[in-house]
Length: 119
Image (cartoon, rainbow, N blue to C red):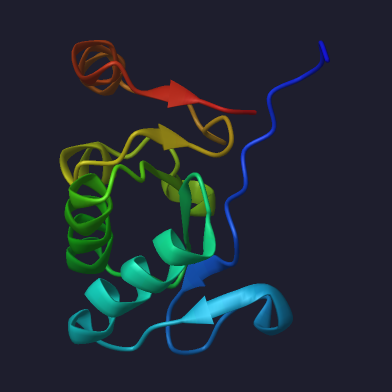
């Protein structure tokens, strides 16, 4: 049937004290990330959604582990959407338009890395 393509992100992947506990997978250490990615891949998700409570090293490891199993990572870090640090962590997209003007350097890096904003 013709229709929209729908992607399943599964739970939001958040830090130790998740903002949305019922719909989150909480991680408090880097060591938890590879197992979580494997579990989410096995459950059939199409993409991983990183949330505001993750540190930059956690986002980078999530993106790295996701690439190993063909799961891109999109990020919703609220006021950090559009952040160069997050772009350099290896993500594929931002979940929402940045809430502030992005510097030219950030726009250029988004173009270079072919990152998208999925608002």
